[in-house]
Length: 236
Length: 367
Image (cartoon, rainbow over all chains, first blue to last red; front, side, top):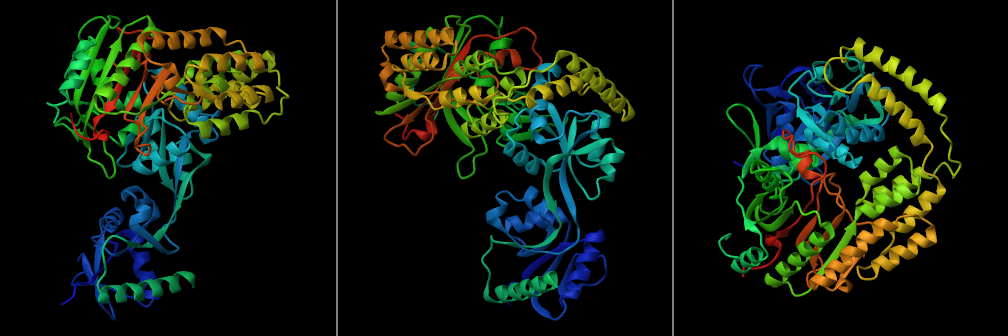
């Protein structure tokens, strides 16, 4: 028996429902083996493919490591989780759901801060005044570092947040945040505002391929079939 | 590995530097607070049972300074040497590698200390078999003096000084700063006073409304201060300052020729930076007296390090026989570091400090 192609899809919530619906539309219905609780499955009518149900961040990590050949996950997860993502992954097609922007948000009361260059000034002046560095709460440590470095901002410290990041400024856990948002209403409700040039990336769910493992003939054939049908469905 | 390098150890000892071996494991915050978030991604981190984040030392300078502060008055004179492993995440290269170097603390005869330390760096390179060292020198105090002499507004001075060392970013900033086309707006103090009061009231309301007034972040007064500062920023730096700064950053020549070069520049552009050039010239003389031929050193006006504890003179040595290799020695004056170390109150204000590190892993074969 030859090794199967591993396709990883989200294991819960809206993302899973949307993925199942999308693949069905693409003529690749996904079936969970045994009960609906199982974390393994297959693509009906397509042999040599094993479906793994994982969390979105696990999918990104496994694609980066090459343990999963193809997967559905957010662009934000890929850019956060996979070191050197540009060479290890290939973004095949956006799937039209799971939209979210990763943004820099500061307290609305910071009426002097409208753009990243303002934040640079604030960060540089913060330590002399407060005796500590400006702090940024986020789950997106790597994305934040790259974006801030791109804007020449060095004088800050990241506070890793494990949830409810938007509450960090009000509890004093951090001065500002980097987080995902769809409509911005959660940010506004927490007295935060986005910066004019502070949208780091516009994310949605993508079909992503790993460039890491070498594929066998059967795996390559199965991959080509899935990629072609997903591209077609994404375009249509 | 670290047991060899005896000739280098002897050299440091003869020059009056005492070998120290500070701890490898440190509170990670100390490095992040001092060197910034950008260093953190290169740290090897571990968490202890109480959840504190620890880091393997990424260099010796900060650990040596911590040991210095723990051992007595911050301002006392002390010469330290080190040789051992440091730890940084480096894609495609081992995370553990050897560095050697010295830190000279507390010497108030700064120019002479600069010369002594650079001379020792060159002797170290020779001891390690580097036959063709190429040395690059920079001095950010000249740039700072120029900003002052050109009457650049304080918020712009801070912006520009912060980017010194990153020439592309600096060029872009200068271009932005001149975009007011020389029509430098005079900021009216009365209008600024009103703007400040209104901004402070508005920021205060919003801070209170969102429960931020008491959490220890930015205050309404601070925010209002920056609203006013933005008015100054919007006025730019003017066409003349932009032109002179760009011309300055392009200056380059040998260190021997540099004082003359700088004086001619100051005359031509009519900027009063004489005292700073004098100190630069003193250092050139001190080097000559120490037996280092300044004609062998390349001065680059735009060379600096973007770490806020570096305060002026910097140098780096490359191996001219292997021009593609990164610097094999990096050094500079960091008079602000001791005072910036969190949790200590003994060191206030600048304390003279200069040192260098040798990247032993970039120099083939231990002698």
